Length: 149
Image 1 (tube, helix red, strand yellow):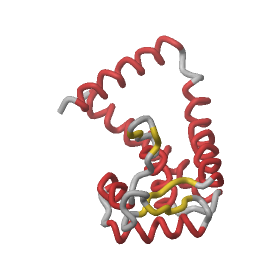
Image 2 (cartoon, one colour):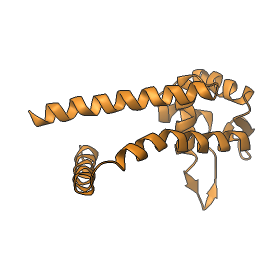
Image 3 (tube, one colour):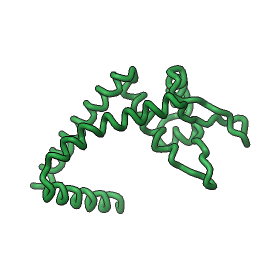
């Protein structure tokens, strides 16, 4: 079946991208787990409240990525020691810590994104326009169907 072949291709692509992620993580002295946590944090930082950036709490991050808060707190400490993130006390509730990127962390995540996407974009640009349009159309359709459970 074509769907099964598609799944096999998808798995191969994911494997290649994971290897690329692992390579980049090592280059920057990160474990793969730290690398993925930085990616998760980068996605979370986009959440805005009242047109003002409010960094997520450790508890909010834990819920989002499916980790226990105390486990995540240890992981955050390791990133903090590397100078990539910092914890700041919540202004309204001193019991809560919010997590933000340091300048070093922001620069690192931007470099990682550029580096990881570079190979993908270079290889994608070698696909002829018609096939690329069809691939994009199919991926958009699949994304929509998967999003509408």
